[in-house]
Length: 169
Image 1 (tube, helix red, strand yellow):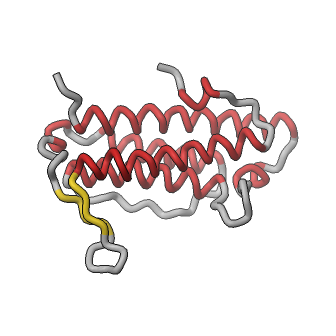
Image 2 (image 1 turned 30 degrees about the horizontal axis):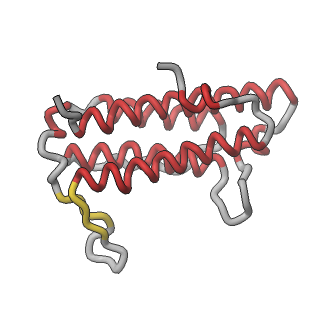
Image 3 (image 1 turned 120 degrees about the vertical axis):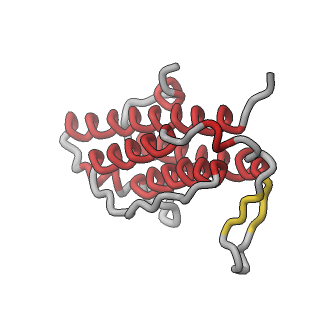
C-alpha cells in the first residue's frame, strides 16, 4: 500500500505542531522559572535579519494550514498575526490543529496531481502539482520554521533537546 497525500501531510503537520507546542511550553516555563521577561524569548532572533520566535511559529502554522487546505482544495483560513504571548501562540497552534484535523481524508484524493498555484497573476507566481508542492515546498518550509523556533529557544538557554523537537510518538 502506498502512502496517501493525507497521510504524508495532516499527521506529519499534527505531530510537529504538537511537538512545537511542547517546546514553547518549556520556553514559557523556563522564562517564568528564571525570571526572564517572556518577550526576551518571544522576540529573540538568531540573527538580526531573521524573524523572531513569534513570527517563526506563525509561519509554521500558516504552512501547516495552507498546505493542507490547498491539497484538500478548500479555502485557506486566515489568522491575524497578533500573538503577543506564549498563550497566544499555543492558541494559534490549537486553531491550526483544529482546522487540519477537521479536514476529511477524502478531500485529499487526487491531490498529488492537483495543480497548486501560489501568488497567481504576480511575478512571483509558482505552479506545482500537489505532490511536488507538499514534498519540495510545503514540508521543507514548515520544517524550516519549526526548527528555527526550536533553535531560538535552545540558543536562549531553554533546556530542550532533540526528543523535545521530535515530540512524543
